[in-house]
Image (cartoon, rainbow, N blue to C red; front, side, top):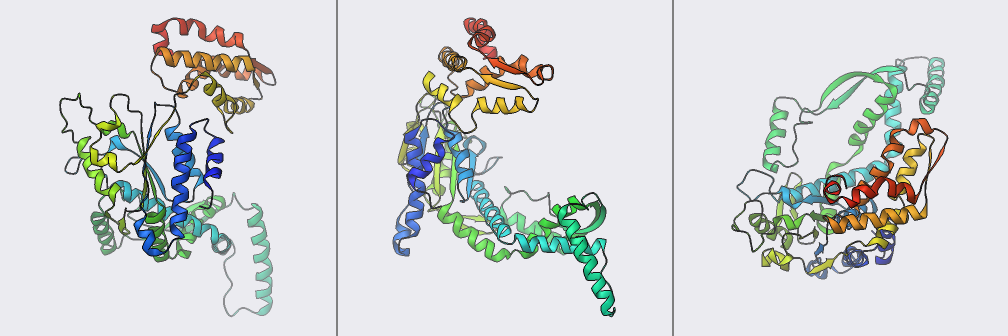
Length: 442
């Protein structure tokens, strides 16, 4: 990750409008990860990540920032929902499973990188296996003439395979399939996973070869996975993944406000709330978590928490947990101007998505500027009159406007349809004016 804070913000600007403070805080936190790794080892150990708490209404871009970070970075990253965890001792997922998820994400990331490096070797192995099925090897004692003839046939077959000429042919291939496949639950404690693996080895269920008849096209895909696993040095992958997880890992905890216990609440002993906060403390502060790949230290994992805090306040979190998130960023509510920009500026804005969808039906959809401004205005008005759901309101409003056009798209093949200000008013005015109807439709 060699992007500067400005480059990170510029990338996020392509997809998320506004919220500069939140983008800046995250960009600095990410850049500090790179800076820390350039320091002497003794100093590295002392520099702790500055965890971030993002506060803002629903639909203002908190989760979207996380979603875009995943696509941008080559770092282990997991997004979890705080409300899905329960206190240790209660039925449900324990908070340590988020660290196990992060380690698994790190393993997958390193595996993917190794596969990219070994692409040519993997392709070679797959081609060799398929060609041997189509053109069985000649005996070792064959004459040089036969060997030359076989070489020519082999090269011809290889060329046809690479060109896709043999894709529809059916062949029988042997695939090593683990009997624990599909049984493994990533949220199970590592000790139980180990016992399960040992048990499968004892009864001889590990890596049973499975014969399957499939097309050459499907065989390529199935054998690629097997070939890449064979070429992987799993010990090297585990070592690298562990380092990447501990020093570059990021855990995004969404809906953290759902585990905050409001001071007005009658009971502060809720297994899915205050107990979860207490369980989170050691992980965020720094501790060792057992995973099936070994022990993971969480001291230098960056935690980004986000919540709307409609029914509670950040101060309703237990004081110790508040102290673990020193950086607080408040995301702004979206006004009419910002909603207009959201519709027009992002790389894959909602309007561009609808235009692309209609293009598949050979319908040219054009949004007039006045119509876009009216959509933004009506969305803002609906957010004020009802619950403020931010940019998510645009989805509902646009669906209502384009409902009939989308339904009758096949009748307008080859036509150009303009979405005008009048059409927007025609579809939405009656709904917006009637508060009761608006609550159910918008």
